Image: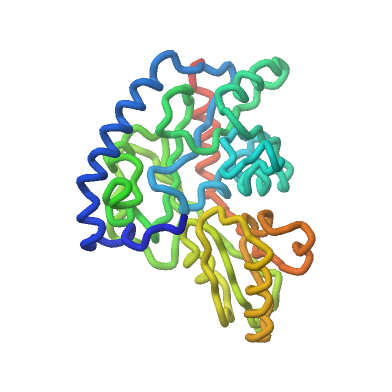
Length: 305
């Protein structure tokens, strides 16, 4: 689905959905306490990287940076994965393309499997799952984009929040991805270490090349705004599976504009294999400040199992 337009402001639609968000919250708390019964405790340390917003904050590049630094395996559900088609999900494919060992599916089963590798003591990086207590975490990290902040500050479906903002106090650390325009409403709790990261979108084209940009991510405006000389843009729902008709229309638009097609790496891995060599993606590099890794090493050293 596309990120609902009402997520970023307090508008009539969001206000009308507030009562529904209360129901969502109380149902979620009931599920939380049920899942908290008899959690999985891993022999290998678990670093959970997640968010309290529904998608689009740049979590996956942070997972990649941490897992690469530690040479750790990644466990994740794999959004849109399918045993029938062999599709493991765009995020998992993107991480695997970077040489990481990615285990997709039931996270508890994969963690137990990785625990059997007795010679390997490296931590396991868990992509998402902060709100799921069925797996004990040793380090919990919340990712934010300071341009999005808390959105309109409401819980789903009135806003993008999965849990109330006060739950941030339960995190071990917060990583904030800097944005050109900072959301003034992003006020973080005292007592939780905050580290900063910088995104750099690297285009494969020269700056004077006209571009038609398309993306199916949580907040496509972030991607479009990071590129230069964009003459047309097309937003699709998050994790969108492109059809041949979509591709034909995109090529027709590019021909009309006398421009090149460009997309994100997450979208590129969802394109039909036979046309990937005809469309390029802009690489997203996320650089986390070095003192975060100093903190993480110390945190892992002191974590008890």
